[in-house]
Amino acid sequence: MPKNRDAARANLENLYRIFTVPEAPDSTLGAIDQAIAADVTGFLQTHIVAIERDLEAIEADFASAVIPEEPTYVSEYTEFVKENLVAHSVHTAAPGFVGHMTSAIPYFMLPLARLMTALNQNLVKVETSKAFTPMERQVLAMLHHLVYRRDPDFYPPWIHNSQHALGAFCSGGTIANVTALWVARNRLFAPSVDFDGIAQEGLFRALQHRGVDGIAVLVSERGHYSFGKAADLLGLGRDNLIKVQTDAHNRIDLRLLREEVRRLQDRNILPLALVGIAGTTETGNVDPLEALADFAAELGCHFHVDAAWGGPTLFSDRFRSLLSGIERADSVTIDAHKQLYVPMGAGMVVFKDPTALSAIEHHANYILRHGSKDLGSHTLEGSRPGMAMLVHAGLSIIGRKGYELLIDMGIERAKTFAAMIRQHPDFELTSEPELNILTYRYCPLKVQQALAAAPAERCAAINVLLDQVCMLLQKHQREAGKTFVSRTRLRIRHDEELTVLRVVLANPLTTNEILASILAEQCEIVQEPEIQALLQQIEEICTGITEK
View 1 (cartoon, rainbow, N blue to C red):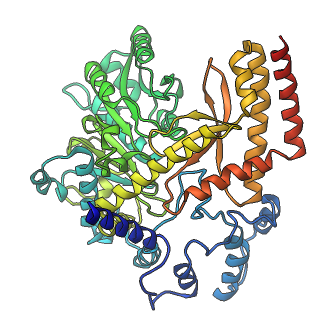
View 2 (view 1 turned 45 degrees about the horizontal axis):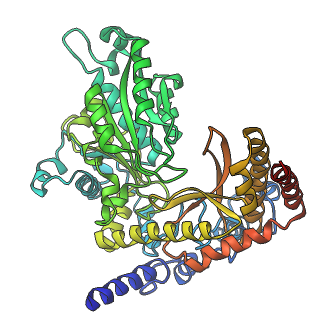
């Protein structure tokens, strides 16, 4: 056991090092690259956002629509970048920036990203990417194996198959989700003896062919907004994106799901796809994927899992079971720029059936010819950069065990922060962390007690005021720039929507001390006069409840 603990400690130290300090400076880097490499976490500024200028003042630097007439020196533009962009950018790598799904990235990503830009490979076509195309195919196979756990001998015939692809690289989860539903739609309306397929004849003719009045996608109310875009783009209509209410644990309610399907059947609308969420954006919860897989099989529809956030949980032997059933999905979305710690612009969708992407295959004589290994024939996007290199670097340098440690740390830290909130008399936990996201709100103990005893109309009045408190609290904390949490609105109890604070704990540099300081800072902020005025109104309502 001691040896195991020593190994774990060494692994932890190594992880901290790759998120902070380079092993050795790269002589090929320029001055800005050197500055970043020398101090990744402190490069931008101490504060999360620059507090000297508000957004309107910054917008003034970008107010002209006139293109400069004459060339200028690179050095002059560099000064503009430093003074107008770097100085006022959000320090998303800061350990106190815990409000969004953007974190610190390992230092080795910086020179690799520079190299990727310099090489300027275009992954649409082998003629413009050569080695990058096989690498992208390998990365997709690695993620496919992570999700589906097929025998390693399964992959050699498929990884570099010119007719098929195990998945698609995308600019993010939105395009990945659109691609999954695009494939599902085209497979549902595949060519037959008397029908040339939806891609050729269009949605109206496809519906006629199947004898239905529409198609629908079912997803929980916590589903990502990208599904609304997909419903629009694919011709379903946003009204046919059926958002099913969630249970007390922010997971899709299976009883209500069945009721929605019955209503669709009554309207002669065919379920195209059932979507499970593995790590909801707002609360980090995981739908009952096994049960959804069973129901999708019963309906005979496509089963897609949006694991853009929670997918990397599969690296963890300890927590992988939270995503049990994902291996039964027809398609799975994973974002590399979230918990694979790759810079922005890298999402993926993998398909259980290696032939699935053929349903959206497109060709062009001048670039995407039949029989070539061009990945652009299976993607919505055409020209794409070589982001696969950055994902490959992460998988190779951090490795499965490194990602496992990062995932385990994030989930444990979320549980620790939840315990801090529960133990603090002035805060109320509004969603238990299942992965590494949680929500809470400022709500003093006396107010919590009053809410438990108050009639519905008094509760509503108190919650309206508490919503304003939380909005002002989050706004002041953001403007102060020391730490940052986000906010959202959730249906919590009695079908009431409440404003809550949201925390995402994926940054390995975030410590328990920083989390404690976030609550301490919020306790200071609520002393602001405008917030105190709201709390005084709440106290008066609570006093009335106590007297009754």
